[in-house]
Structure formats: C-alpha cells, structure tokens
Image (cartoon, rainbow, N blue to C red; front, side):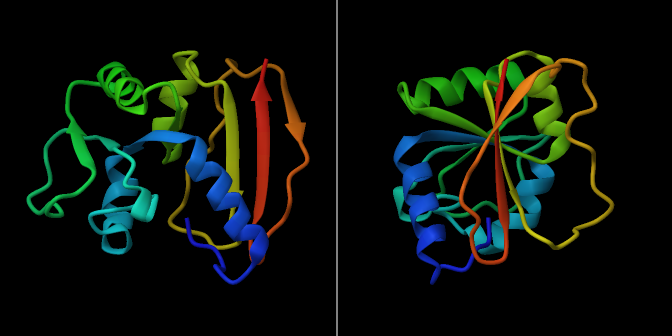
Length: 155
C-alpha cells in the first residue's frame, strides 16, 4: 500500500490496521510486484507480521530473515497457517483479485476493505464476480491524501 505518510489520516489508518492485524495472505503476483519495496519486513513494516504467499513454487531469491512463508498446497493451508500465526487477530487477504475471489467464494471473508489509489496497474481483474456477496453494508471511512478507502461488511 502506497500512501502519503505525511497525511495524519494515512498514519492513523495504518496504525489502527496494524494493531488489529495478525497475519497476511497474498498471491504470488502481488508478492512479485511488491517485494522490491517490501523487503524482509513488509507489507506491515517494523511490526513484522507473517505473510503467507500462495504460489506454485518458492521464488529463487527470497529476502533474508523475511516474514514470508511460501504456501504451495492451497488456500485452505494458507488460511490455516495464517490463523494460527495471527493468534486471534485479523487475517488479511491482500490481493490480487484472483486470490480475493477464491477466499470470497469459499465463504471465509467477513469484511472487505479496499484502498483505491487512482493509478492503473495492468488490465486488472474484477473483484466481485461471485454471487457469494449478495448483500453487504458500506461504512463511511476517512479519505486520505491521494486515495480513497472503502469498507464493506458482508452479510
């Protein structure tokens, strides 16, 4: 997530999310695109939350002493490992859309928080192609500098 760190709304949003977060699940494409910026500690930074990367094979180069676990035996295994590592805290599914769709279809997503930055990367994949989300509530959230955030509670 790239945000203007000088904006107090951004800092507050990241601090609140970081306090609740126990672990992250992400796909290989998001990992590959982000690892140059994330390094060994990210995406959460100094908090060093565990990140479970869904992949078909372990990358050739991995950050030394990184927070990453490469999961090659499916989303169920990634979720089980992430829940255990989170120790009762929030498990975040951090895209891309294909990974998010898999978890939504499986019925294990309670909330959706979207940080929309007005920059396009590639052609994109639609997030809500499933009929699994038939009803959801949108909650008002603050807007930061250069992005908008949307929060949905799935019913």
